[in-house]
Every structure is written in C-alpha cells, then in structure tokens.
Amino acid sequence: MQQFDTYINQHQSEFLSELKTFCAQPSISATGEGIEAMAGLVREKMAGLGASVQKLEIGPADPPVVYASLGQGERTLLIYNHYDVQPVDPIELWDSPPFEPTEREGKIYGRGVSDNKGNLLYRIQAIRAWQETMGPLPFKINWFIEGSEETGSPNLEPFCLQHGELLKADGCLWEMGGVDEADRPMFTLGAKGLLYVELSVQVMNGDQHSALGTIAPDAVWRLVWALQTLKAPDETILLDGLWDHVAPLSDIDLELLRAIPFEEEKMMANMGISQWAGGVSGFEALKRHLFGPTCTINGIEGGYTGPGQKTVLPARAKAKVSFRLVPNLTPELVTNLLREHLDRRGFSDINIDILGGEHPGKTSATAHVVQAAIAAANEVYPDSPVIYPLTPGTGPVWPVAVAHGTPMVSFGASYPGQNLHAPNENIRLDDYFKALKMMGRFIREFGRK
Ligand SMILES: [Zn+2]
Image (tube, rainbow, N blue to C red; front, side, top):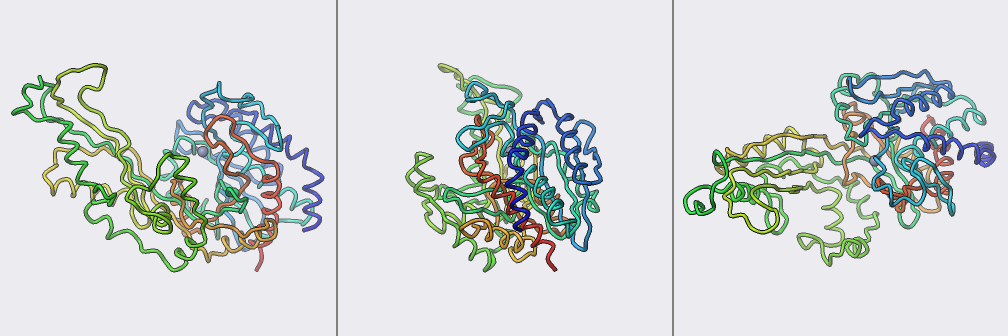
C-alpha cells in the first residue's frame, strides 16, 4: 500500500480543493436549492473514475439518484451516499459562510462537509488513488447516491423494493461514520426503524364552556387516558404484544455491546440530568439505548394554551407519537398492535394517522464486508474499531441493503465535534486522510478471495 499512501500524500491539496468545490455547491433537499447542479457534479466525478453513470428518477418531485457502476470481479460492493444537505439556519451562528468552505486549525468548515460530502468524496478519491497505483478495482461497485436523505428519503423504499437488481450485492458500505471521543474508529452495522403516527380524537361537535365539564366529555383527558396505557412510569412500554416480536440479542451482539465504551456520566452531564429514565445504568442502560424500542410523545395539542386563562372544554385533541423500532418490529406490525391495543381498552374513537414508517435493518458482524472493514481499520488506526451492532437513529438501511440480503458496514471521516445538522459543520483534515487510507485497505480486503 506504500504507493497508494504516497499518492494520497502527494495529492492532498488537490483532494482538498475538490472537497471545497463539493461543499461550495448548495444542495438543500428541503428547498431544492442547487440539487440539480450538485447531482451534475457527482455524475462528473463518477464519470472521471470510468464509471457508467445513470440518473434514476425516484418520483416526479424527488431529487434524482446518481447511480454509478464501475469495476469488475466476482464480488459486488454497494455503496450508499447522499449529495443533499440540511438547511443552513440559523445562519447568524456560522463563523464563516456555510457555502464558502474554510480551513481553520486543521479543520474544514462548510455545510455538508461531514454529512455527507466528505464521506462521499474520500471514497471517490480513494478509488482514483487505487486505480492510479494498484490497477483495476478487484470487484464491482454499484454506487447509489441519493438526494433526499435529509428530508427522510420519502419515496425511496418503494423504489428500492421494485429495483432490487440495482442494489443486490455481497456487501454494502453505508454513508456515514467516523471516530469517537477517544479517536477510536466507530463502525455501525445497522439502524433502528421508525413508526410515526398522529393520534387524534374528537369528542363533541365543537369546544364548550368548561362549566359543562361536569357532564360533557373533554378531548384532552380522553387522549391522555389513551396515551397513559402505552407506557408505565417506570418507562416500560406497555403496548400489547410488542415484546413478543422484539428479537433476542445474540451472543455476538452482547459481546460487541460489552466492548462499547459508554460514557454515561458525561452524556448525562451534557443533558443536565443525574440519572437515566427508568433508573437503569451502566450496561443495562447501554443495552436499552441501542437495542430497545421507544414510545415517545413528540408533542401534544388541544384546548387552550395561550396567555392567561380561557375556560374551555376542548372538543379535539391530538398527539404526535413515534416508536423507534428494533428487529423484528415493523411499522405495519406496530400500527396493527396499536390499533388492537386501543380498541381492547375501549379507545376505538382514537384515530391513528400514519405519518411515516421505516423498517429496522441489522447486519451480522461476521459478514465479509464487516471483517474487511475491521482488517482495514486495524492497519490505519492505533485502536481497534468500536462496533455498534445497531445505531439508535434511523436510516434507509432496510430498503437499500437488508431487504435484498446485503450486509452493511459504515465507516468514515467524521468525529464527535462535527456539528452535524448545525452551524459550523466541520471535519478534521487528519480524519479525512485517515479515512482515505483506510478505504484503500478496505478495497484490498473486500476483494480478497
Ligand atoms: Zn444528515
């Protein structure tokens, strides 16, 4: 890998100027600003690697997917990235303009530099360095680069399920990744799913004088009583049947969990709390955090909440409720469980509107793609990778990879101070070049017979 590393060292300034060009191009999926131009830049870069490039339409109003195929060999690697970024507000909190990438103190600042343009570009540059120094790629790559990740990839799932032939692979390299507080590389092998619903109830034609609270119904109480059946004060989720479907942890999951550093004191101090909800701590808290489902009341609305008093008896109330889903819960299953749970308790008047759903997706740590990443990281970083079998967040891991039987792993160029989705988003240059070098080793390892 000597020649590969030398190539990278010699091309540092060229690589950085490419990164700045990527980050100078706005590509905000929430507003559509710059999306087409950014997709064009990505297509150009892919063509530069000798890839055959297609523009895939997900839906009439969705940003296009850039789909690139390159290399040859028995194995196929799927890479998933996204070229869209979050909006820049609050703009006044940026120390340099979000779309004028700026280098300061070994870091590069700009919207999208971490999420996800840096993590897209280091992979492109590593492949170029490989081609220049090591020869042709030892396997085939299908690269799926979407433009609506930051708006929740709303139409991606049906598209992916219909186009399995574009996605089927022996392994998938996921979009993000980086190092933790102690500069240990962090890998993730999956993501939780999500069910997002709005629960609403109407108990009368319209609001009434609260003097009628003696004999007329109150919609907010009605909703609160229904919500109260879903979770106990000790934080146990009470949804009927939910726990019957939660997959037990494997021995490997438990082993990986035990190896994860969990700095709970620091996390709690950051949040201004002195204990976790439900009174759990240590390993139990980590296990619940990474492998537990959630039932969250994201917001509740009804009656009067303005200044002063208004003695109203509310006719309508609604709440946004979300469930993070672990294997083997699915949005459809939990919706059905919720309907039955409410009906069984006499709450058939509570209406359920589904606002969004994503399946959870998880990969085995013994998969070739994961082992290749571990071997690659061990050559570049002083510490062995910390492996998260599942991340507490949600992403389209299931429709892109797991639904087609493709195991995934995620590693990259980010770090905890990246200011994800916030002003002054940044990456450290040192992390960027380490990720580039790791990618070279990953190519070698993934292609190994
Ligand atoms: Zn993001």
